[in-house]
Image (tube, rainbow, N blue to C red; front, side):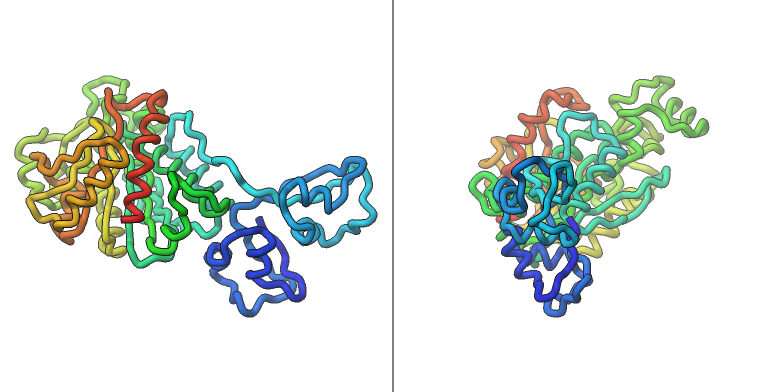
Length: 396
């Protein structure tokens, strides 16, 4: 919600008026000098929307403010041109309304267009979010990173490396939405106050690494005729793409990282297809290049890659992981009921490469059990079990 500065106003005053943390106000208005507001300047108030209200008989600014659990001044602030003592039934005023429910809808197949819609809605409602493009897919879709928090501990979450694991993107975005609601409404998540997490950690999220693949699984082949014929050929003539894991070129993006890549290449398919083809060389596909570049630039302390299948957490690579990894994975498993698995004869994954090159804590979280793509009917159970992992990733 946007408001206009009056004489004598300050961000601290808005913080008190709307009961929004001052740090969130500062972060929502990065181009504003908080010590030098100007009359007429526009300020973003996170966690609020401006709704229209039609005056009914007996209404007053005071009664409306009481109903919205806001001070009278908040209603006056967003209606500067109106005479509060001369309201008439049928007149339309603006009412600041606190957002208390999710904007991300969990009961939907989550393709790229829905992700973009949700990111835009969240960014508008919570302007302290930073959204940027880290690269483009084979088909030119933008790969987005969402960033929030002010802390020195840099934590990264990602989802949908694999196309038919698109439910991971929905799980991640639902957690993000709940985290934002907690921050702006001052209520805990599982007993944890969220603002200390915001202060101690900077969270980076790439909710959908493989948008081309996700759209292929959910919506079928691209409109471009050349790509239509290519993907059907790669899928052995079938137009059923439910088992497709790769990017649009038939390369498995989680086999694209230089962490003993040659071992994965030796035992996997030697040509593009729905799954497990590692490509001609590591870091060849644009989606993998974008993730590698981001990881190097951000210098993450910890990464969590969310996949689906098995309710297990993979946490080691070639014994290069730091000793603290074991304690962290124990906490992840305690809060989720998942099982820890240290060694797996699998190489060239994002988590593997991160551990190898940084010797820091990296984890692959396998959500849910069943046949991919996991059905939406499993979403509530998956989210309930994984929520503790998302939180622990920030507080440990």
